[in-house]
Length: 63
Image (tube, rainbow, N blue to C red; front, side):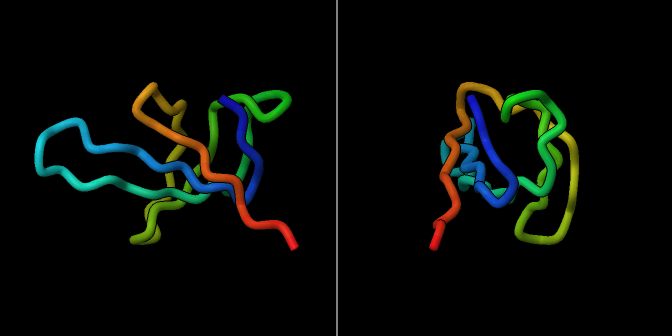
């Protein structure tokens, strides 16, 4: 998995009925776009994470 600042991570719910979560990559801490990433969730919470197989990178829209 590779991501850049501004990309969004879509994390699928692991439990039936649990909604998906979206976080924006605000800093790439690994080399060449690899994890870990500092991310900001929709509610403003920030954390450092290494996404698992239930996560998809959605590239930011570039002009």
